[in-house]
Image 1 (spheres, rainbow, N blue to C red):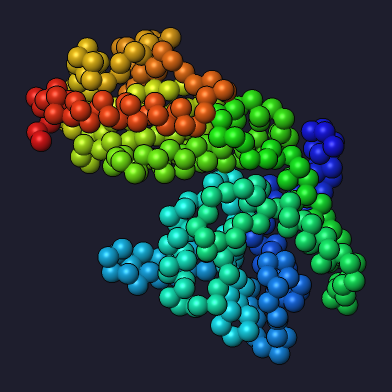
Image 2: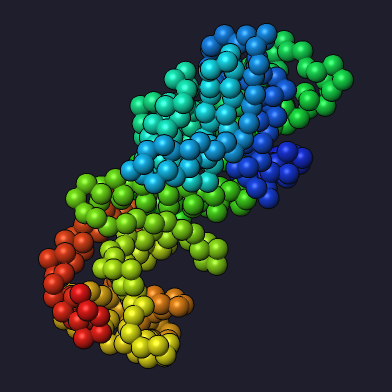
Length: 370
């Protein structure tokens, strides 16, 4: 089935059209309804454990758990979906359609929840099935979920008497939708930065989701490698205007001053945030530009970069309001670049920055005291 055929099929589906406003929440809500309406079948989707109909069960979404670890500040966690059955048995489902799962987040979920309940099964739902997860977690792709649902809910099942035809149509439509979504979503790549080429093969409604997912995947890869050696922060985002993913690798000097290595689309850039200085915003911009030029001229930052194509208020720098200025590298990132090559490039820039840290601080010492 080609791209246009998948699109035509999805557009004719009530379930698909209802899911568009809040994709992950919709799928979580549908599965929650399924768990409460057909609990004995729902369990078979995720586990072969015996379900005792004589005992209470409950399927809930957005469940909050309190972290009792004082060293972590008692921060709460919120799971997407939970199915509790047979008194003290629990299935936790984390639904990841448009982002890559955070390894540390999943480990924290396991640590906190298992202090409350020992008999717990941890499931990650994803459009892809080959994901690096903590050993306690099981990944189920939406493609596999569709196959299981088709077998469990479409063969020899008694639907609720008063809603038999309605429930059957709903569930069959849902199976069809997640099956088509899975077919449209490319299989796991070989850790190559080809997302903007690959997205052309995807139906229009999924292209932004695909870019967000692959950007998240890259950020996760970089974070895993960088955190081993350096105390730099990794953040990801999505530009709705340019339809591009953004990965920021950030070094904070303090709360007001930080340096960025930024990947957006096929651009590799160096950025600088400076918040201190004069009370007048125009004076702060002038100071920021002076510091940035000094760093560039002395070869500590913004090295091998190009001037903006258009005139900006920051002279030879691009800028984001209110405080971020940057320059793009002369060397971008093409679709054949591997995640490993991108990460090694970032490491070299980090190493150079850390080697020159004292000199960098001296460059801005006339404006900021350390």
